[in-house]
Image (cartoon, rainbow, N blue to C red):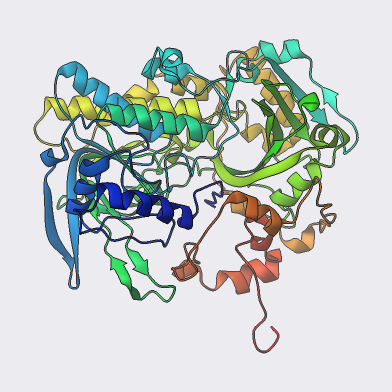
Length: 602
């Protein structure tokens, strides 16, 4: 499920930037190893990593283990405890220790880092805080709509306007339409939208969430947070008593055949007295931790949506900065949850996309093709006429809401943001709730660590603070909105409207479920095959053509990052293909999965 494809700096650009600076600032640093597999430059050891930061923090290229902005080190790296140890028979791994270890450089992770530093500064003490992110630079793997609600940012930085936060397109007009078919549109009266707090966009901003994360990273680094982009956390590390003690970064220099290449370097182990997982929706480590500690024991299965997005440059006559438009209905059928968004952002950009609930029943449905079909609506075509598509991307969203939130704490760490699933579904917003939960996680970690010389086992007070916050109140109010759609769009909208406008979420019942998304899929034999029109190359595009706009770049001689699990190896040919006609080839927004014939033509 976790697919993210957005603009990122190509490997060649990283290398050119690196070598331009290398002669100026790192002549004396001999222990650097440069690698290009996965669009990142990596230091060969903890000492090399330290030297890089000390020689030119902020001068490094995107992907180098340095920062996004030049800033002084608030806490010298010499304070960190560094050692080496043999991890297995033939690999020795470096270790670096921090007070707070954060995985994920999105809104939640950065808010956690900043708040931890704010708490320490207020107490007049020091905490070492580290953030690692797999993106080549902070923001590279951040994809969103995004209409941003500032509530959590107001708490983190009350003077964010004066500080220059990149929020410069306020919402000035918001509209909502029901599309009964591919020709007509029915506007929903504005007074109804504004009567429901979840649908009122006034006071929000159309933003680039990637740019906001870059800005947050700059603020964090000025406070002394260590941020290492271009480093993917590969596996959790556990202590003698079963507690999480940190993460291990991915090995580099591994060939497609799984063998070590000459450029092989073992991934570092980054240890933390408290580890905050803020990877985003379906984060790899978060999923492992939830299974390891059985954190979903008392929650409903998480449900997901797949968002397909494009960014267009459109003529100024068609553009009105700050306009926000949402639709429901066509091209999706009555039983499929989803809807579209179109956000006008300065100077002449429109961020548009379609979100499809992955609990759809027809295996022939293609979320990507549904979005291409959506752009053939006369009103949408008129908006895009004379424009150019400049970017394409896709990502998954948590849609389970309150009922699917797992236990948030475990020995040695916490879950924050979309790793746990705090998206407000009717709002189609999760950045503000991610930031707030990250803020609370950072605060809980800092207070506990500053009060105790020993690392506390489990910070249960973090979950208590989340449950007592406006995040929990907000999700509780909309908890029955998405589940009601299992009865269809019309009943779902009717119930959702009554719940949000009349009951205000105070109905004495809570809808629950036990089925995962894939369990709603019907056999292909019982469904009508969907034939999609050939793309016109002007408004709609072939998937592989669009994928070029995503900026995806892979080293072909590296291990596949999407694999069929060993215990599911027989499922594709024994179940998926014969029963469901291979839906993998249709639901993937990058066309990763493909069924091919063998030598016998089978």
